[in-house]
Each structure stands twice: as C-alpha cells, then as structure tokens.
Length: 180
Image (cartoon, rainbow, N blue to C red; front, side, top):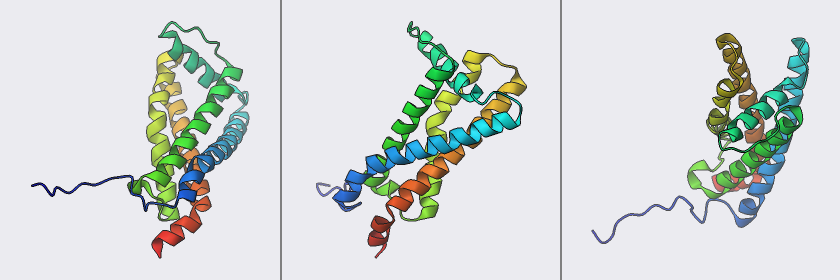
C-alpha cells in the first residue's frame, strides 16, 4: 500500500510556461472583447424592443446594490455602477478562465469544440449565482423575471462562446504542439 497512485491535476507538461504565462492575459483580453460584443448586442436588442439601451446595466447596478445592502454596505445602483460591475466581473471571469485552462490538465483546450464548450459551461455556471439575485432584489413579475433570466442566459452563452473561441484560438499553437 506504500506505492499509492497519486494524481496531480497541475501536470507540469500541461502546457509550456509561455502558455501558462499567457493564460491570464489572454483571458483578460477575451473577457474584455466578449463583454464589449455582448454589451453591443444587448443594447441593440433593447433598442429593437423599444427600451432604453442602458436598461441592462441598470439591472446589474441595482442588483449589485441590493446584494451589498444585505451586508449593510450602501452602494449606488443604476447604469454607471452597472457598467463598472459588468466590466469588472467580465475581466475577472476572463482571467480565471485563461488561468485555469493553461494550468489544469483536465481543462486543457485540445480543440476548438472543447474551448467553446468549456467557455459556455464555465460562464453559465459562474453567472448563475448572480442571475438568481435579479428577481430577489428587483421584484418583477414572474413573466418579466423569466424573460429577463432567459435573455441573460442567452447573452452569457454568447459571452462564453466568445471567451472560448478567443482563448482557444490564441492558444492554438500550444494545442497543436500537444496533439503531436
């Protein structure tokens, strides 16, 4: 029993040190690009529906203010805080993704299909705790809440797709080297 098998999920050979160093930076860039693209789509969709383009940011800002109020922290809600929170979270999620896929063997991006799938799965899982707060703090009708959550799930899936494509495409030389 002394010779127990051990598995280290942080295999040294997962990716070269250059890829590990690039991971957080690529994630940061991908998070920024994905956030900008999704914001443009969101604003266009809202305008198409006859709503103010900034409504999505107001929801984010108001939800964040409601969340922090639980801890006795008074924060302003509204559009500007919503923009700030949205970009901070987008950048942070991008860095975490880029770091994880270059450091953990199980998350290694071996194909574009895996990159996209992991990007979407990661984004949806990470965003669920924030999405469930929207109906709690904004107290909309059931149908409004369902529509809003559905819209956010689709937008986050697009964000995750972009994240996966950008990081996966940027790491393609490392992916190819590992497959040889």
